Length: 339
Ligand SMILES: [Fe+2]
Image (cartoon, rainbow, N blue to C red; front, side, top):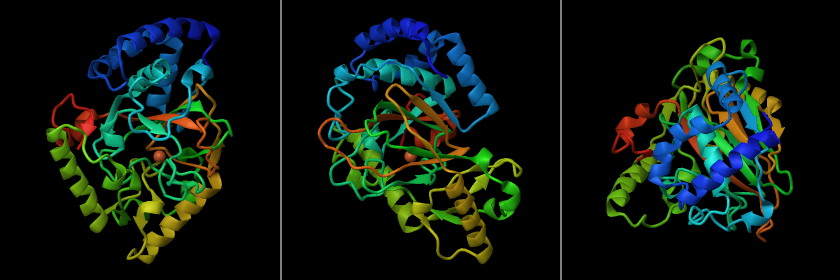
């Protein structure tokens, strides 16, 4: 869907007003109000999001045309740390948050980007060849977002602020796969070792959050990540309807040895089909892409980072349709962080 100038004329004052009211997208009151504020979005946009949510007509929902003032954005930060304060993109971030809140509840991970709800996706110096979203010279292997975790999101969403080299995000839609050619029954078996991805490692977090209670909970969370790395859990790769399955896999972070011949062959067949069906999506400033994390895998092609303030810069949100499903992992019903 492309927003019209009439949509922007309605949205701009509303977003400016909300941006003046809050210092950061992480403000607890803003996050609490978001599902109610989302009702102020244009009706046809809400209907579009609802049709995507309920009917699953595609694994990717792209909303284009939100106005972004490139001048106002200023330089792309060198790191995600601290970028939630004084954000020049706060009005756009609020739009993104409200759209996300029409699909479900936004949430974060204690072990990822210091427990923030809204992440930055930008190249970080030193990560060029590391398997993580902030790499650049190495492509980011396609994956289900947080495939290793039972509380992974229903959607992973990306909002583009800058993409000067039109770097491609890659997406494969489960609807494009030929399931009749695959050993679906084998892929429904809990035989596939999946490990946490690098973005949840303690070396990619700040030493301390400044809150001793949060730090204690976070240490427990990192211990769990470590145990899942040391003793990887076996999970199914497919679930749901056997004729039109949902999928969850992150091959780069899977231990491929010790699988039966049948499991290995079924997995390889699925990966080959996904590789063949990947499509490029070149996000433009103002694009908000909502990727169905049950129906699609996603990644990114390699690129050369500039490190001069003009680099590709996206914002990212995780969205769940079942916040209660992670209640055992969160200290309170209205806490959106998974520990
Ligand atoms: Fe991802």
